[in-house]
Length: 321
Image (tube, rainbow, N blue to C red; front, side, top):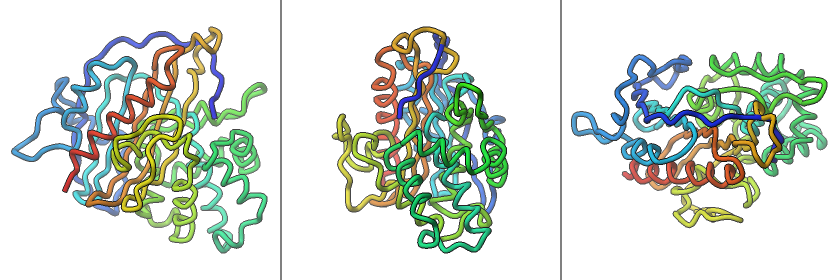
């Protein structure tokens, strides 16, 4: 659901910088700054190294012509590599993608209590989980966030992964808080890896992961933009976006809001638009996070969606087996 914000300013135009591809063992969690030491000159991500094409080839060229600031992180399960790039250093707000963390926090707590998932979860909580993920219902998320322990509890859950560059926003006298959580694309890839691959192992077991993916695979058509574009074809237009492909499983969550730093009327505020998800099928198996901020006022939601879907299409094509 759209979250009303306050004020923002235009971000300076910056060329895309490649943060590198890092080989990792499947059992290890990447540090928050993974790849930062490999930061290269703008545009390097368009150049294949030693004859090996990168899944991000061409993405920087595309983003050079786009407004706003974009972060992309991709974990390719087959190669065990994390790829990341950024067009700037602006703070990125989660908006509704933080709902995946809220879901994970509750499932982890049930798991610790020995509750059978999902059958042992009460109807009311399952209803809120479904509404929060499949329909991005803010009231459902606020209920689960508050009664689950608020920012302190979610921060403790994030530390298990760990999400070292994520700061959970707390409830205030005038705002429920969670939508102003700040994060990075690399941290959001770590979050999705818990559901996609069970890494780290101690966080969510098979039943919890399967239930979480089931919800993320059932997002209502009007909200299934983003990382579905490419995996589910190139006809990705609103209102229903890409139609599902039976041969490709996509679990996703999207988020969108005007920037909370904006003090102008909402229609004059720039946007934050995000998409995170896992993709498995047709010879690909990966997790992708694309975060966009300072998308133009007025048209920012559609502009951010367009940016994310072009990036997703290119990555899907580059990973062709």
